[in-house]
Length: 59
Image (cartoon, rainbow, N blue to C red; front, side):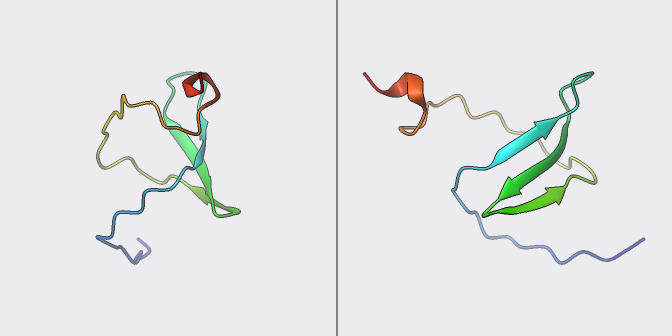
């Protein structure tokens, strides 16, 4: 198994996530112009807030 460097820092920035259409599990995400493959989901948290940048949030 390959060792991966981890970080405890929380970064609050928008990302684009690609999902598996069969079970909606995340396959990869794009952050700051770079694509990252999801090897394993360790924890899941749902954010139900609507960010100000979302088109439907603007009056």
